Length: 226
Image (cartoon, rainbow, N blue to C red; front, top):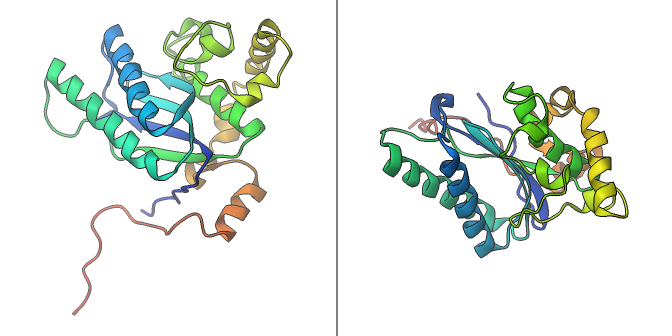
């Protein structure tokens, strides 16, 4: 099965996703979520990666991040995934692969797509049946954007700041937007195949510039015939 394109661009926004192997839980108790956030901030600060939105689910995570230098993305995520796996194995034991595979990255077009991707991540708990409303689920950035709570790890989305003049008005506007976004899975599902969260024109320009790299295939490379 061919893999989708992996776009790598400097000074850009990305949606990052990874799951536990065989969809097993990667977070067991409260301290696990806290530890993940703590080491994530530590690794990302070293390379200038900004955390815009996040959602930590029991068996996977979503991150919306701003990356200044694309070359730092792979290294920082490898450090995060390996560092958390070591923590988990040291605490709970276990053998074999911890993550289902390599992390997935999706390039986000700035503008409304940035806000929509963040909302998609924060509504994950509702779609998964873990909460009736996003405010009922603790481990996401919704509480920062939708309720105005302080969160020192988040760099505020420029699209969020443009919603209104005051903090209270922005939070209210954000809550109203979420009411109409429960169908985002259907609307945004396409970018999980293409690797891009943006307009058709945005994706076309990336491909024309040759920023998408090459198609690759799962498994080992085929042996060359002699």
